[in-house]
Length: 166
Image 1 (cartoon, rainbow, N blue to C red):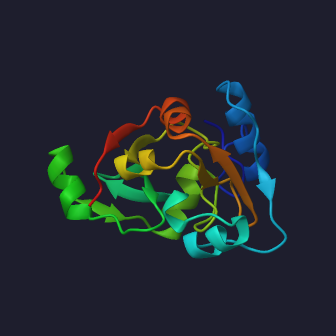
Image 2 (image 1 turned 120 degrees about the horizontal axis):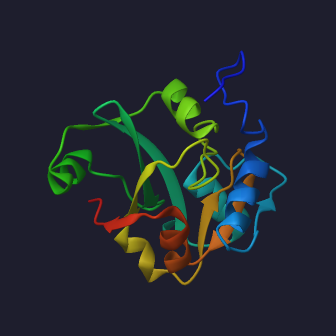
């Protein structure tokens, strides 16, 4: 894929929120992106701004598995147990990705990573505990934007595999 001087694909516009909006609508989901007045780079900040339970915030966490990105969509209320996830996958060690690795593979900065809108599809796991919430909120590509979605719809548009992450 051709790259610009900043390392991004020339085929993907550099506006991450626009990329998320496009990915949602192309997948047949509603564009529910909400731009908040302040930054919401953490699950706690997002929950406070949206008036929802922190457990309904879907953190989009990028890990590295055998040199490839692995996106884990996890509840904002808990940490991902990478050893446990590695054991379930039966493959190499799952490691937290560097901010540069995250940006390269998602086109989005840490703290604003969305489940969709990336230059290429990323292998995705979905925290099964999120199914307990009728409405989830996920990052929409930057530190000010979030979108709402149901668990089933998120699973469908990301092609995620449901898994326990702790």
